[in-house]
Image 1 (tube, rainbow, N blue to C red):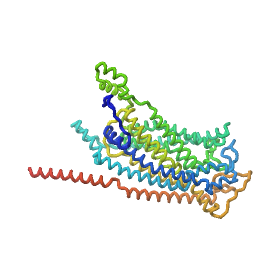
Image 2: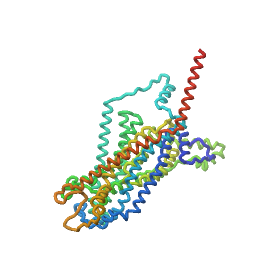
Image 3: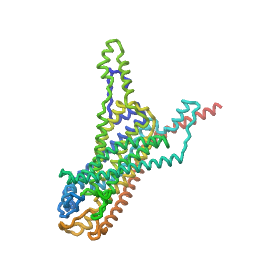
Image 4: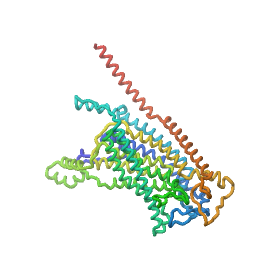
Length: 574
């Protein structure tokens, strides 16, 4: 940044290979591994994004011919009002458009895609380990140990150096555990506040003057809740970071400990609301005559008429689009620092006429500008990793509700890798180069996300979506089962609601228990099949290429042979 004369031109192509080479030589292996991981993650998103688009186009091509959607669009069933005061009864066929839209991400292809993404997460990690092994072997840091290097530096700098002993305090650990629990309770409490906001907003919107908003009050309330959730995340990110720092001061002050605490806080901040929408929305709101109410006044929100997965889709789409778009805009619109070339064009030419060396003058000014850049610390790279790992969570954990998530992540990363490079080179002070041979605790975090992806997607498809109820209806109750079309009567003296209850005493019907059994059977089958494929993928792909293993074997053999020859020569001299 500051070691070139203004009349010399230099251009760097920010391709993945160039970034890895330049970042390693200038910033050290730790930053280089971040760009190596980000580039590899972006490349592996290509097949996932392509398959997600194919699943979306498949649903788009056949949703008009679906017999179940046709039944919804031609139904005469009268549904109960969705709110207390201004809402009227409505017919099921009014949701024809929503039923078609929901079919785009709630269909047979989504099941296969969710299984693919769960296995993809494992394959990505295994291939990343191979990819990383190739480069760390090339950089001669494969067997590097951070602890040994710190001890060597300590001895070199101070002959009387004594290593800091490991200590553990059960009292401090208990205190940290209690404080972490309280923080998680606070985060979950914010999720409940978002639920109350949506409930109250839906009531207020349904009583408004705009007809469109009044007719779609619940959907608008969900979108407003998603926007509020995004801004809550931005505020809580700063709060979580401050709390994590304080907890590290109480307990362990290592980067590993900070990473685990911070990611845990961020995970609950980002996904608590999504977990509620996916697994609780519409299932705890009661039934006609016995609705669950907040403070005995506001009726708890129901799922979208086309299904609960629609609410999850809206929530994820709004949050992901806002998070990626606004974050990149904020990074891109920060004014870049001027380079020495601008100084040369203006002031340096005058200084040169006066007999001064323009390079020295411009270097000094450039050094002063670099000093005024944003400060960095040992946790600066953590923010970049956290942003990408959170995106990885969105891409895998609830991908069954949003098949286009890998495509959005791919588009974002194409810009992200360049913006991060611009920020590190132009907007921040230079990070202190550090040597490493891995991305650290983030590997374990990514593995944990891969496991959660299997569980979450199995539950989303089996419990949240209407895939199982439609399947049971199609082959057990519907036209495919009895060979005739089902005709619904129309009676304005009664209405229907989305549940499986007897119309006499509201007791659960046999359909409910049948669908519940099929749901759980699907979840168990889905998770076992995916876990088996994940284990096969992890076993099939070695962590290190054979070339790297053979090179390390030859290197060890040469080293041992040299040591043996040296010992033999010393014995001969004696």
